[in-house]
Each structure stands twice: as C-alpha cells, then as structure tokens.
Length: 334
Image (cartoon, rainbow, N blue to C red; front, side, top):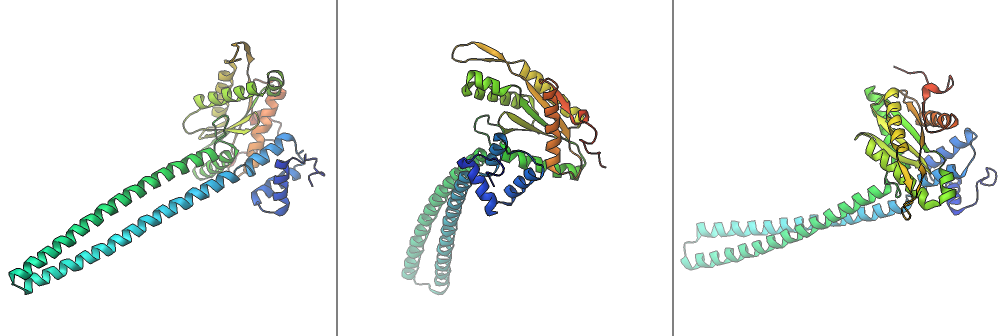
C-alpha cells in the first residue's frame, strides 16, 4: 500500500501504515481513509502530520501509565495506614470500656491503681501509634504531591510542541472538538485561523535549520503575546500554525489574523551569533467560522483553503472563507 500511494519507506511512515493495515487505531484509520477519499497525495508534510498525530505519544502514554500506577500504590498505602489506625482505635476503645467497668464495679484502691496504670500505658501506646500514623500520612501526602506534579508535567509535555511551546496537533484537535461542541450548544460563533510562514523553505535552505527554528519560535512568541486568554494557538505541522477562537465571528477572526500578521511583519530576523539582520518574516493567514453541525474536517479545510488563497494572492495577507469561490463555504444554519 505504501508503494502504491508513493509513501517513502521510512521507519516513521512504516509504523503508521503498519498500524493502519492492522486496524489497531480507529482514528488513524479514519484519517488515512479520508485522505484516500479526497485523493490527496501523501506528501512529506502529510506523512509528518500523521506521525505527529498518531505515533509520537506512545512514550508519553507509557510514562503516564507508570505515574498513575505509582499514585494508586501510594493511595493504597494510605488506606492500609488508615485501616490499621481503625484497628488500633478499636482496641483502645475496648481498653477504655474495660477500665470504665472496673471503676464502677471495683472499689479496691490497689485494683484502681493497677487499672489506671494500665490505661496510661494504653494511652501512651495510642499516642505513639498516632504519631507514627501522622508521619506516614505526611510522607505519603508528599509522595502523592510529587507524583501529581510529575503527572502535570507529563501531561503538559504530551500536549505541547517541544520547539515552540505552543499546543501540539493532538491538543489542537481536542480543543477544536470541544470548542465546536460548546458552539453547537450555546449558539456562539467559533473562529479558526490557519497561518503559514511565507517562504519558510527558502530561509531554511539559505541560512540553515537553526535559523528556521528561530523563525518558528519568533512566530510562536508573537502568537502567545497577541492572543487572548480564551484563544488557543497550536503548531499544526511544519511551518503551519492554527488558532482556535471561541466566541469570535468571522469579522473578529479576520481582525485577529490581521493583528498577528502585522506584528510578525514588524519584526526582523537577526543572526544571534553575528548580529546580522537577515530580513523580514511574513505570514499568510486564512480565516473561517464554524457552521453548526458541520464536520471539523470541512471547517479546517475551509480555513486552509483561505490560507492558500492568501498565498496565491501574493503572501503576507489575510483571506477569509468569504473570499473563496461560491460553494466553498457552507450556508449558515440557525
């Protein structure tokens, strides 16, 4: 199948297609079959997106499972401690009850002294047990807190692009899906931007990948500094970014894209080692708004079509779904 669809036999591509043929991942199967139905070519970018989306998180899942098991073990120890404490408390209660009976039924001073000595010894033992329990619970609480922080770190790493520190493709998909559900329920608008760095390959070929990484970080930093608290910026793949804009109409999404485009264009790329100014970075953007009940694939595709229209019109500009040919954007539904 890989040969038939001209997919290079790299290990990453082989892992994806092996999983597809084996039918082990329904989401991957749906993604590849959608590409096949649309007669898209399996370009290097498409293959990279498939791998980033469906293969690179196996190690993260394993680590998450390991931490989860350690949390379960720690909680189990706490429950054991509490069970032992209940038994100790029950024994102490029985001793107190016996002491109370002896006080009522026996007036012999010698017997009373003996009973008091016994209950004092029981009380001392109970205090020591409580102190031990307190120390064990404190240690367990500290361990659970450390594991929780580790778990938070792993979750962050699993949903964050390592280079740009933006959301990765996996988190973008989850965020867009949730935003669409909320838009369907509330009737509020939902905007989407697809953004691509202009002539990125030319920068890479001319100055090398380290500069390319610097450009990606610059654009990512601009996105983080410009967007609102409820917006989500993600590295969609390669030099392409996506922005989910809950509550934003098409006009508002276009305005956000224009602000981002202007901010990026106002910055200059310099060689950090020599201080040489290497030029201006620009981006093109496509904006779309969600139509109630539509598939997320068509929503993203519409924003992507607007993006490539912007690039075909000369780059460093923003186009929206309203600029697409008739039929490219769905009719709005109530």
